[in-house]
Image (cartoon, rainbow, N blue to C red; front, side, top):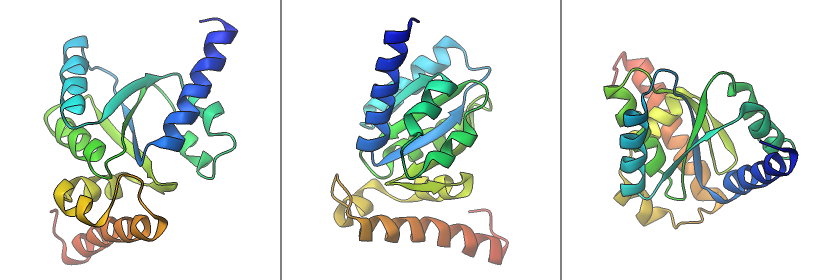
Length: 165
């Protein structure tokens, strides 16, 4: 990859981070080509996407973003699951990871808010239909904070009650 291709990749990644409501960072070491093809197919069916990225270029794309700390997750083979839908990328990624130990969710960003693994898992449990009724494609900040609160509250409640679901 020459310099101009790298610059174009940084522009594309920056655009992805700015335009997508949800980006989930994953580690995909050990996934076969067939596994990745199957995963990408499921992502497309849900209206989401998956992109394997170069860590350094991804960090460069985050440089002037409010959530550049997300770059700390970029070590090893990293892929980005993304969607405009506030739930689709999380739901498909978490579900696929349950059946394939080689796909590991590391965290993500939801409308500019960094999410840990537990928050991504909680977001994946929300129904797309339920969130779409309160959440248009470009989610307003108030709704984003509500969904982020809801996802984190589920984690806190589960931890307090000793429940794993």
